[in-house]
Length: 118
Image 1 (cartoon, rainbow, N blue to C red):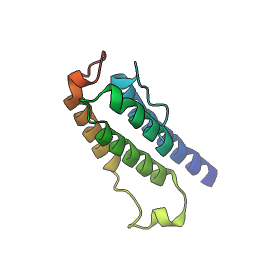
Image 2: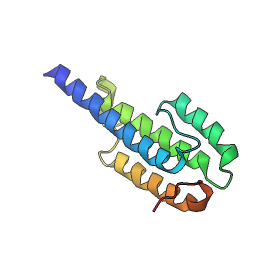
Image 3: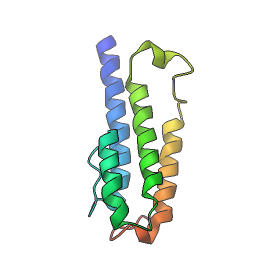
């Protein structure tokens, strides 16, 4: 049963990461796609995107992506520390980040490029 729980948590993490990737790539993917949700991938995207989208708040988007990645990792982690209340992210914290990301992307509107968010 423990192996199934780990797989389910991993699948949930991948699903969360794909969701955030999809949202960012819907806005920026034509010219500056985000390749992954690791800190290195997010930093690479941030650096590449800042020059092309000076009107967009790339740093804020990158910060939200890093936070989502960290929380998704904590949710998938099986270590004892994660199960102690001080280390666990609140259950709705991913949804809050998703809403914040959508808001920031919508605010960017015309500064993003050919694809616009509706």
